[in-house]
Amino acid sequence: MDITSDTHSQHISRQFNQELEELKTHLMAMGGLVEQQIQEAVSALLDGDSRLAERVRDNDKAVNDMQLKIDDECTRVLARRQPAASDLRLVLAVIRATSDLERIGDEASKIARNALALIESSQNAKGMVEVRHISEHVRKMLRDALTAFARFDIELALEVVREDDSVDSEYASAMRSLMTFMMEDPRSISSVLSVMWILRALERIGDHADNLAEYVVYLVKGLDIRHVDPEKLDEAAIKRQD
Amino acid sequence: MDITSDTHSQHISRQFNQELEELKTHLMAMGGLVEQQIQEAVSALLDGDSRLAERVRDNDKAVNDMQLKIDDECTRVLARRQPAASDLRLVLAVIRATSDLERIGDEASKIARNALALIESSQNAKGMVEVRHISEHVRKMLRDALTAFARFDIELALEVVREDDSVDSEYASAMRSLMTFMMEDPRSISSVLSVMWILRALERIGDHADNLAEYVVYLVKGLDIRHVDPEKLDEAAIKRQD
View 1 (cartoon, chains in turn cyan, purple):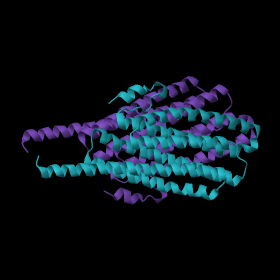
View 2 (tube, chains in turn blue, green):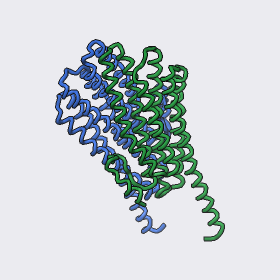
View 3 (cartoon, chains in turn orange, yellow):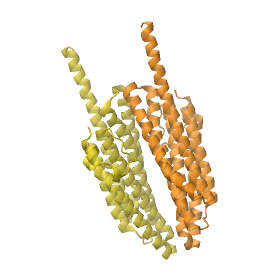
View 4 (cartoon, chains in turn orange, brown):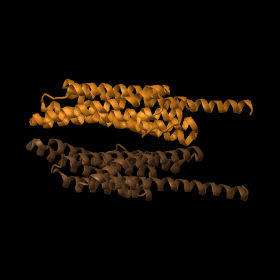
């Protein structure tokens, strides 16, 4: 190979790497936006701020637009660069990740809509301690999953996968106490149901963060650990694998 | 190009087409399985058949395994064949579709778990007429979306997209009457909640069928109509586009 074509191919490969970096950057931006959506939806609820809740609900369009844009970039990269091996896995992981982030955006907007209903009913809503707690938990999971993605950090990704079980049990326990409360005070049924939908949305956000973490393992190790029971995950083996 | 290499490239392209056909066939098989899961979960509920409900719950693993297998085939096709244009869109549409089918499988298994809770409580559950009706509606949507995918049928796909709005309003009306019922008879709270989760799962299945139909439009026309308000879809323009 002569020097010119070598320089040329280096140029191509530099451009390609840059495109892959941009995919990751855009995914992180989308992740940042949906994390903010969750945070603001929950703040709107806890502070009774209906204007903020409306803003979150209306902002969902921006999340959707980001998904379309990033997916389109991924398709272009696949068509033009025909990536293989770990580059291909990165592009596929980004496509899967945008789908989960978009659904997290939907859940944030559901939280905002239920917050609006609760604010309008001006009832003293039960379960706010649980909502705050679980929302902080799943936001941390989401942040960690995104960091793990950006840094190709398997250890952190596996931590997120483990966390999801504890969110699920916090959720189940919160739902049980809300149901008891509903039975004791049937006048609260409508507002307690809104809180239940909010908790459900938060629990789903935890599931999506868990999915994101699984894509990191796929991305880095080429192992598909979706649908593997976290307790059966042989973490040592995953970390060893090359 | 000499005859030998021409024959060779025809051979390659025939093999490639066959691989793409197989992807579609496997996707249809997965779709058939999840449709059966929905149907059996609802039958188990309506007939109080706890053994059937347990089978549906346990069968979810088979759905998950199919997703992993098909996704793996897609990755291989991308890596080896480096498809472009409509072939690339087909592979990407299949990857997206397996994710929705897998989530439909999850929802069917949620229906089965709630059916088990209802059967055990042996309460006379309200809302069964609505469950039956909405389940038939979303199963039809799912079947039509899969047929549209198999035949690249845009008209049928757009019909599914339109149907989703009417499922959403049937769902909202069923939820309102269940809430009223709960308020009138607080002893029913626990069982009505189970029925509400079942309706919610059915409504989500409608959303996933809607997604599948949107992938068909992407697949055939290269247009991404996710997040477009169905009322604003210019169907004539979509059908004209080449």
